[in-house]
Length: 132
Image 1 (cartoon, rainbow, N blue to C red):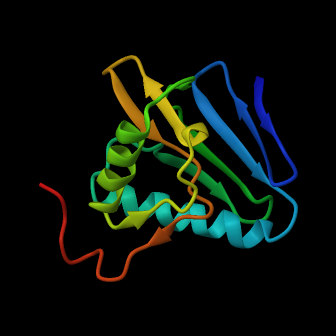
Image 2 (cartoon, rainbow, N blue to C red):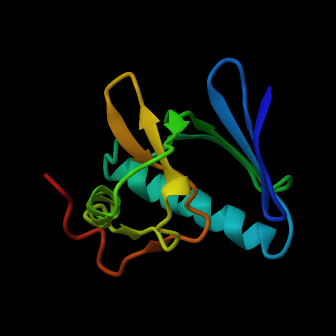
Image 3 (spheres, rainbow, N blue to C red):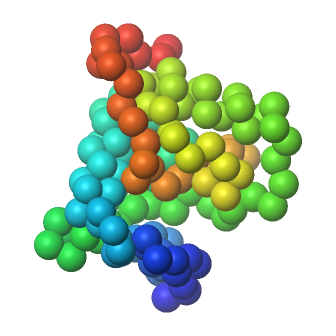
């Protein structure tokens, strides 16, 4: 396993078979875990293809396992960053941590993706209209 993030709020490891394991710790770990699970399930139900897919969620250990959405980007211009987060809102989610560190690039299809939804918000009435 490769440790890709180790902060006061979470530790993220990448397995050699391509899964991402995120362990929440620190303040509000149970709430942040529950929110990310809720948001990822919401996005999957709406067919959002540029976010990780939730594979497992362990509420006792505050750990999720997701698919890998590629490698983090080193540079992305502000206009493209704004477009990505606006595209996410079309699926009924506001990211609430709109930083380039939450953007990855998936080489398999040349797609920028978004990660890290523990602070995200599901928008009101987001179930009523789905993107085409």
